[in-house]
Length: 567
Image (tube, rainbow, N blue to C red):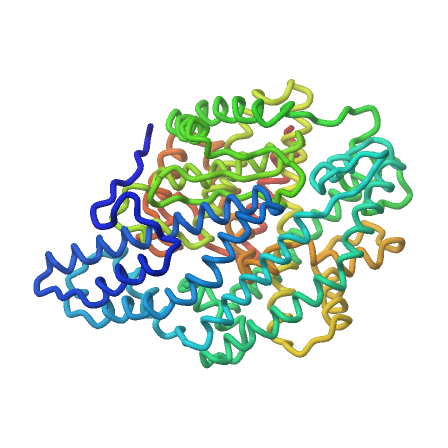
């Protein structure tokens, strides 16, 4: 094993974190403990870190188990207990610990950029803390769980067979246009059937989030969230520049990609159910047969990039830290969940055998490698990277792994798969910009109606979306399409990082094409830093720039166009 579970030195090994009567005395001991020299101060930090790591792991497994089976009442109840009973009681105690650290004279003896960044985050947490927000945040988490249960329980009936949304989505690749339309209509019938309930959930989320921001002294939730997310290296103005650069340099390329698709399909009008269609005479790409096959091929391809990468995935598989197959009652999406105490993270996804599933595995595998590489850092706080860095790890792995996708495809299919992934990497950028711009509008206009929200979304579609797909027969589906983006509900403002990291990943891949060994070395060094340097400095260690200018994005898009032309 590359990583062994962290041995507890402060907490008993069998300590039950879910019970408040056992947990509270531990926090109080740390709050009340006195230290008279630097050594005892550092021991206190390590003990606190051990407690936080154990708590994080408890929440992690509760969330993992709940998302694997949203219908399991025991798992849902345990997660809800942590969110509604334990978290609210912990918040004031965590705030007291932060204050104890921030006021200590010994903190000036903590040298280095990693401690500087961490202490800056601690100071922000103290500034944001409000007693009245504890219950509000618990209510917010309960609402997001409700959204997840609704979307996780969605399925369609087709030919007397019940299909999960990922399984249904696979059929949108069919060469048969009638099948695609039937499936598309069935999916949207389900989504539109839940539209009113989900809008109601979001209205309450919006109200409560705005109240959280107001309580903390912020003009709006967006400004509050930027501080909460620890965005020390870019501003809302940088986000606006990103939106403009994508509209200028990327959206025109997306129009060309869709125009080519329409031509190759021989269609007068490209409908939303045509965008993922398999071209005439081409069979659907099937990179793997089942979840077990995906694991075997992923481990091999990762090992061919770098032996360490393959060993990381193999260890996770041996530990049972991979749950990859789509099944009824499973939450949508995919994630890699770090486990700071166990060390080896957990990958969750909904694979049904599509090329998108392969990319998701490469993506989450990149996150997993990041967890392994940063495991030995002194404190868990140093391992918790901002998303601009975390997503750089995953998206770079997507592109670098293409070199060994011959493990999944024959030579002819490999060319198609690479072309489609490069096109998808380009097409993802405007969608990311749209979702981010939409969230800025949402929280700048907190008194919006449902109609105003839909109109704003459609207006942003005009600015950043493609002009080729014909939505005239699916106007309701287009107006409601924002509801499928779970980040808007569960992780507000955590999305533009994917776009920033996508640009960084393209730059990493460009370097990888020129010098693979050097690029892998830089990649591993950058990821091993965790959050011990600023985001631009970590990007620099990876051999790339943290830049959203039109000039830089054009340079990267020119490279992508060149690579596409050579496939």
